[in-house]
Structure formats: structure tokens, C-alpha cells
Image (cartoon, rainbow, N blue to C red):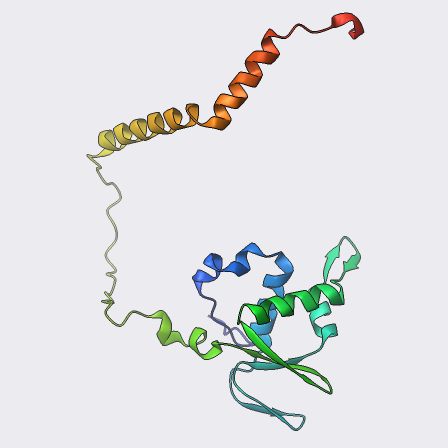
Length: 189
């Protein structure tokens, strides 16, 4: 198996439960870009010392990061959009920023916590090894009839709840009034 160059980041599944998942796609794209560009170790660059989880960027970097193509035309976010994204990240406590002469230094908060593999493992979890024995090709499920009965009951409950909902009753009333309404057919061919 070939080694993937360029390193990696860890992304917790709970990102979909966060407020980030309710924002426009540009927010997610900038967030992932910052995670991939952040230093994974302490680094000295251009006379600056960057800690783990920090990166230096400019608004132009973010504009390029957020760019995408519509056919052959390149669509870029505006500086205002980028500024709003960064402001939202700061307000949510996801980043802190400080200005420099060559852009800004961004510190991703809790970078160490989310990029530490041991935080994704449960120490009480028993890791069972899998066997190499083949699975049986045919399984018999005696509960198929019970499953079908449960599905029928769930379907009946769903239909009952749906037909008693205010939206359904309103739509039914509107449909009945349209059916009973006499149309002026003089304008029809």
C-alpha cells in the first residue's frame, strides 16, 4: 500500500453536531483549510516561532482557499465574506488571531485535544481481534415475520400522526374547497 504524502488531520464526527454544520459551505472550507495549514509541531519560519496549531495567513490566502470554478470561470469569495467567517470563528471560540506585518497569525483553539489520537479511543473498550473464518453464506432469520409486523404498526402510527397534523388538515380543507369551487370557464378554449 502506498504511503499518502503531505500528512493528515483528524476530524471528529461531532463536527456535524456543531454550529459549523449550519453555516454556508465557505465556512467549512476555510475551517478545513486552516486545520490542514496549521503546524503540527513547533516551527520557526521567517524569524517567527509558530506553536502547534498556529498558522500565518493573509486575506488573499483565504480568498484563494475559498475559490471554486463555475465552468471555466473562477469564483472567489470577497474579503468581507472571509472577514465574516473569521469573525464567526473567533466569536465561537474556535480561533484567536493577532495581526502581523505579513498578515495574521491564527491559533486554532483546542488543536492539541482534537488532533490527539488517544482522545478518540475509549480506554475501557475491549479491542477484539477478528477471526479469519469465513462467514456463513446463508443466515436464517426467524424474526422476519415479527419485523414485518413492527413495520406495519410503525407505518400505521405514522399515517395516523400525519393525517391528524394541522398541515394535513389545512391542505385537505384547501383541496376540498378547490374541488367544490365552480370555475369561470369562459376564458378557457
